[in-house]
Amino acid sequence: MTTTGITFPARDAEAFVRDVKREVDEYFTSRGISSKANLGMVLKTVALVLLTFGSYATMLVLDPTFWPMIGLMVLTGIGFAGIGFAVTHDALHGAYSDNPKVNAAIGWLFDLLGANGYMWKITHNVIHHTYTNIEGVDEDLSVSPLLRLSPSAPLKAVHKFQPYYAFFAYGLSTLFWVFVKDFKYFFQKNLGPYENKKHPPLEWVNLFLTKVIYYGWAIVLPLVVLTNVTWWQFAIGFVVMHLVAGFILGVIFQLAHVVEGPEYPAPDEQGRMEHQWLLHEMETTSNFARHNALLTWYVGGLNFQVEHHLFPKVCSCHYSAISPIVERVALRHGVPYFQQPTLMAAVRSHHRMLQKHGPEAWARRTHQPVAATA
Image (cartoon, rainbow, N blue to C red; front, side, top):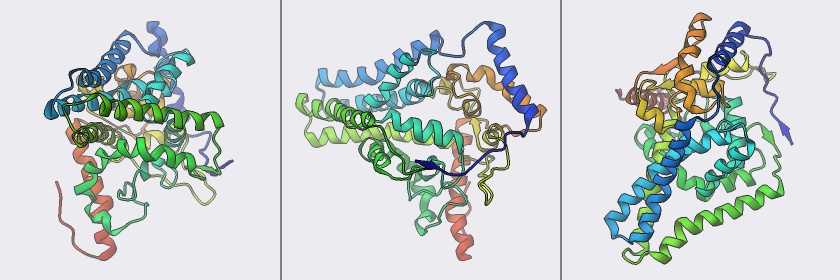
């Protein structure tokens, strides 16, 4: 297996790197607190697991008719996304606990929900977090050929319409994930910066085993147990669950990098990036709605993506506290600290980027006028 020759300079913005690490570390040491999960994080984990599997179990026990079933599936989808944001994301980063076994056990919820934790660690923890917003390497920029999320991605005629269908496409993301995406990545010869990537035999076994478990509890069991809905009615409910979860997950993750402010740096001909990795993360990442406590609770602090990218092994329950420290040090050293004030401001900014990378780029290519958007 080989990897791309992309490299980051070892010495760049040294004062910022030194100070931000030192001052965040001082925050924890001066208070004598752990950078891992606290009691609030544990209680949130319990709440989201109960919401997800409790809603699904309620459906199986009560055997409701169509519309109550749809309501329970919506709640399951909301919990599904919450577990992804606020529980397994931390665990798979090794940020939930100092004990690797605890992280592995909690991270297995990811597999239980139909995704694959091993592959997520490769595509997200390694590739996305290392090569953020680098076209052709960062897998998050190539979620679908129907979406053009960076200025250097291939431009197709269909991208003229992406501001109108992108959010629906995000809703399909978890359906694609549990049925196609993981298999595609496992069988894919080249993955991000990796060429001829090989996977351990045990991970192949885990892939197929956990998929069978997910398909069993999420699809087969309800079809056997439920009597007040037909198979096609349940299929609608299953799709609704994934549309809810996929839409929430897809939108929140896009608001971290594909909004106004963050850049799309590219390596030179020798594969060298301009800036040190930590500064690269500051230039390619954005926060949003930092003062929205409910949103912060639900999305696991992923509205504090700047802090997450700088300190991925710090539990998300601490991001709101260390965010002012990171911002203060960034401003002191002239380093960008991108943010959107509210959730809706971030959504609108993302929509403008879809417009910029889609219809506006197509208009420039064909010298046609393009309608203005808000």
